[in-house]
Image (tube, rainbow, N blue to C red; front, side):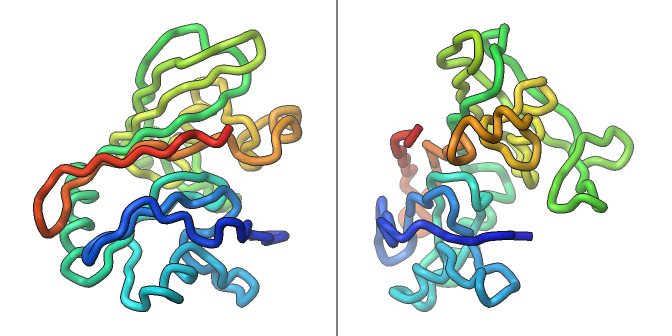
Length: 217
C-alpha cells in the first residue's frame, strides 16, 4: 500500500531515446511505472507517456522506489517483439546500488529461489521449497567501513529480486523501506538502486541498442 504518494514532477518525462517503434525513458525514484488501483495513484510513467503517445505500451517495470531505464513499445508489434526478448532473456540490464555495510568479496553471484511473502505482500522472501529460480551477479565498485557501491546484473527478473538478493548477502540496499535496517532507511532520502544500463535489439531493424544513464546518487 502506498501511504503517501507524491511523485516527482521535474522533469515530467525524461526521454532518453524515441522513434516510431520504441521509447526509452529514465524513470525517477518515487514514480510508479504503471497506475495503482486507487485514483490517487493514477500518476505513473505509463500515464504520463500516454498523454503524449496514447498507443504506447508497457513492456517491463521498475519498482516505484527504483530509478533508471525503462523501454516502452510504441505499437503492438513492437510490444510483442520486446516481450519475447525479455521472456527469452535476450535483453541485458545493469544496476548500481549502495549497500549497508562493507561487502568483503569483490564479486560473486546470488542464486536463491524467491517466493511472495503473502501475508506481508508485496514483500518477497527466499524459499527453497516453492520459490522460483532467481540469479544475480554482483561486483563491488567502491567500499568503505559503512557502505559498499556495487554493480548488479540480474539474469532473471523476479519481483524485488535485487533487494532480496542483497538482503540475503547480509547487506540490504540503503533506503530500502521493505528490507533495510532502521538506520539504513533513515540515512538516505530514497532507495539507492538505479537501472543504469539497458541493452536490447531494436524490434524493427534488429540493430543492437545500448543505453546508459548516470547514477543519481
